[in-house]
Amino acid sequence: MRKYISAAVLFCMAFILVAEAWAATGPHLKIGDVFPGFFLKDLNGNPFYLREQVGNAPTRKYQGILFSFCAYTCKPCRKEIPELEKLGAKYQKQGLGVILIDVGDNNKVAQSLAAELKTSLPMLVDRYGVVLDLVGHPGLPHTVLIDGAGKVRYLNTSFSEEKAIEILTGLENEIKAVLDAASGASSR
Image (cartoon, rainbow, N blue to C red; front, side, top):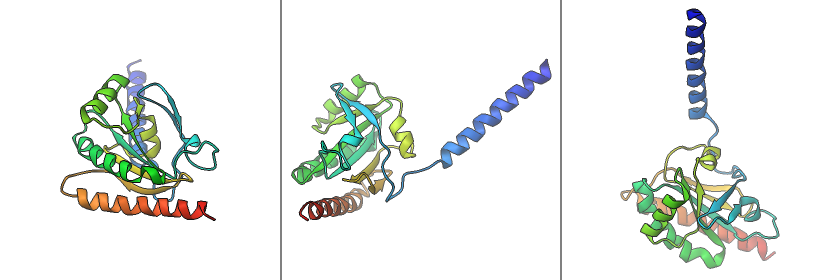
C-alpha cells in the first residue's frame, strides 16, 4: 500500500512539474496574431464581447483597441494607467478604444482601483485571469494594441518611469499606424 501511495505522490509531482513547464513555455501572443475572442463584464455588470468590438461585426465600435491588463496591487499599472488615459483622450475621436482589464481582483476591488486613479477608462474584470492566460503572459502590466480586424499590432509586458517615454512613443506610433490604416480602408 505504501508503494502505491509513494508512486501516486511521485506521479502527481511529475504531472505538476510538466504542467508548470508547459504553462511557462505555452503560447504567447505575438505581433500579427489574432487576439483571442473573449467575454467579460465591466464594473457595472455590462457584457463585453470582443467579437462585437472588432472585425466585420455590424456593431463594431473601434478602429483599434488598446487593452491594458492591470491589478489593484500592481504599482507599475498605477503609473501606466494615467498615461493610457491621455492616449485614449487624444485618439478616441479617431476610433481608439482604451480598455483596462483588471486581473485577479473582484468587482469591488477593481472599482476601488478605478476610483483611486480617477480613471474614466472602461474597466473589465477578469477575476480568475482567464483572458490573461489566453494571451500567455502572466506579468502585469501587460499592454496589447489590436487593429480593427483583431490582429495584435503592439505588445508591452512592463512599464517603468525610466522607460516611459520610449514605451509611450512606440505605442503612440503604432496607434497612429492602426488608425491611419483604418481610415484609409474606410475611405476606399
